[in-house]
Image (cartoon, rainbow, N blue to C red; front, side):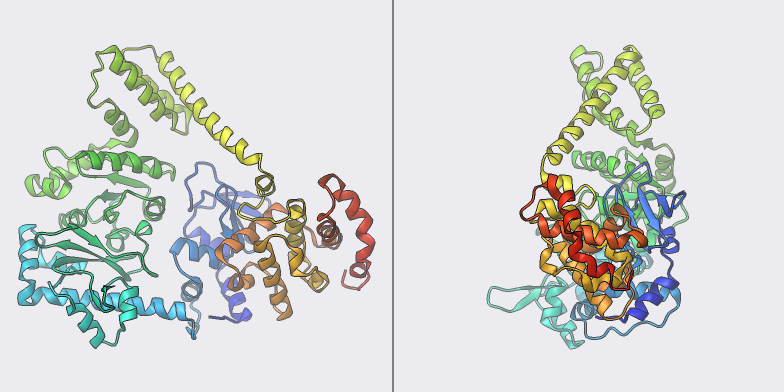
Length: 582
């Protein structure tokens, strides 16, 4: 879908990037023309995420993400380009643009509608005779009708085509049903319902759209839980069951559990901040989603080995985002649902209040099964504890836990401190060696400023990057620029062609007007270029001439000759300096 340049410019003007980003990121540090905060796309303790209001871009010097205000909304809200434009239009109170004939946008809109209608149909099946099995199951699990309605629970009949026929009657095609993951293709070319004889849990995203389903089998059969496949509107690694309700909580924390029934049971018991990660270990994207709504996460996984393993994996993911992590151990029950039914909601609330911190939990898990009266087990525990403590970002925390472990094992604190320092050095050395290995590759050295760019001609790389940065401040010289084939990097070539296309249309060149022509990766690269090669308008003309000379000569010249060749070849570009545009 093509939006006019004027419309995109108005989108940017009425959605200042510092205000939009500020709704997700605390921008607290100013340096020059940039404002800094903690990156919302990766875990960090020191702000490396920058917003430049004057250029209308954001850029993270840690993970490299960047682009315009539209790119930011695309990334953080998991939207495509037209959806992000609509999001910002609604934010600014602007008339919504027409969807046009964009097939991708049209398909996603249809899938949202289809999932909504399928959820309504599944819910309606609870009241049918066939839905008695699901109603009986919910009664056994003490799920009230009110809770079932709140979550939109439903029933998928034990039929090969009941949903298919119902959705076709509403006008949906087999292709749309397949794209949504609601049907599967048979060996003979037909389709059949994906979910059969299952209690259905609609997966609803933070914007309130039904994006997928999770179905619990109501009889014998495997798998016990079946989730929708990846679709154009659903990514399991980026979604959390219950987030649409939990984001409204006033509890001050989110409870992360393993199963859908645990989420439903906790909400029914008054714990309205519970979410689940759809049967998978917590991912970085899910941790980022949590961090947008809370600063504290209570892990309450099942008490078995798999649950403990999942908790140990989740703790560092959440800790890197600066979230306070607590871990609830459920005594005498396999999961929160079973505990609440046996002991009640208040007993579970006490567990949350008395929950251990993430570090305490990790240390306790490391000590489990060991006899700390045995020298052999004590040494094993001290090594494991030192590794855990060494990951803590601040000296005070490391000191506190080192003293605690020393007392626990009846050893001198200096011994634990030394072990922690050794563990930190090993980790630092591993990271340094990995970086050195990367830096020995020429293309990696070149890409330090703008990672993700591939070059067919390494000596030309810096000139290609600097040239685009210079053209960004002197777009009036683009018609004097080289042929696109002069760029050995396909990514930079695409950016250059987008700049020329935008300029030829008479539009201003900036991060927003280029967004429709660039992939998210190319938008990230463009923002990196502006930060890595800052160019003043009064020096851009000379920089353009130098860069074009270098690109022209590097096919045959060595790196050491570049500056000399560039100076010698400057006279080839006198037409630029004399055309009256400078």
